[in-house]
Length: 194
Image (cartoon, one colour):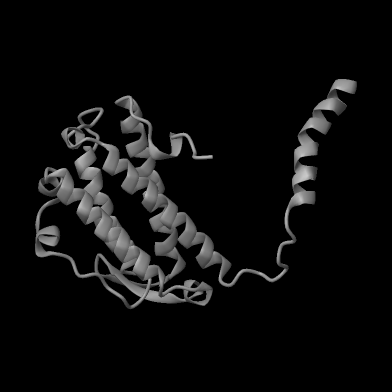
């Protein structure tokens, strides 16, 4: 019984001390909390993905663990395409892309040099960051008209925001696993600066 109390005390003491030392937080709610959280998570994923692709040598962009999986180069071009797909639906702002990015088959783009793939990916990140400027919580609650496969429907503006976050997290996990398989640490596994 005494050991259980000791463990409880050891666990509770840092939390209690931190609460006593923390500056008084504002009681006012953050403006547009849903948009703020979505934007913060999106920008963090973009930073991690950019850092991951920057750190992978160009010679590895054709790497894939097994035959059915995507190469690192394919993932890079796929992410750029997905970023435009989702972020074009954040509001009225639409991206303009170079013709070679929209007319070249994905399997061919996947073999482009690392520099071109990473530059394209970072341009898509920059567009998404601008597109986020159109959003606030009221806009997230709104709808837009989407047409897919000849079907038109009304879609919540929140849908592409969440879809974008899930897509980036999925592909970051994929790239992080590829890096680990090649004895590289993904950005989120690197030691944090003190």
